[in-house]
Length: 215
Image (cartoon, rainbow, N blue to C red):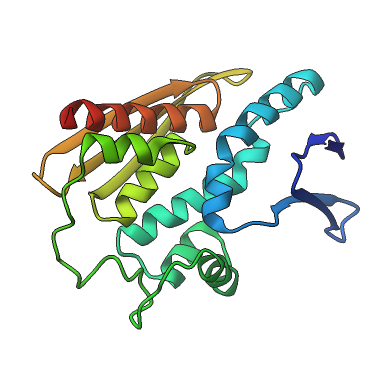
């Protein structure tokens, strides 16, 4: 369905709030867990692009919160505390803790994701078949985040840049990660006219490199 000039998929809700300055903000939410939100990212990207094109709206607007959640998870996987991640991305600590609790993501006494930090155990080797199963029904970014949570990929680092004219930008995302099994570094890059698509392209490139190395 469409509301306030934006496409809203089934199962989502739109909340319009007044800022008190004769302006209104539209917030998009989903009655779902955080992993569920990640799994629905690709569908939201496709629908947002179609609707944005019809109404001549920027396709990136609806991706803001999904992109924010992915960045927060990536920083937690890198060992940042919940408070540090919240401050970095402008998310209230209480709100971020609520998201993590809903997603059943465990935070230790040191305010860090329990899968990082003191736990230095080597994860079990990943097979090509396991990677294929993991990719089914998931977006490339969700796969990268899942591999990071399982400590199969470490030292995840995203970099982005923008070139081109204001009305026709070109976004570039670079992604690097270290394989926990052999210590090798994977480097990937994605380009597109939208941030979401460029980020997804970089993640897909990295996952394909990992799949080729495992085959």
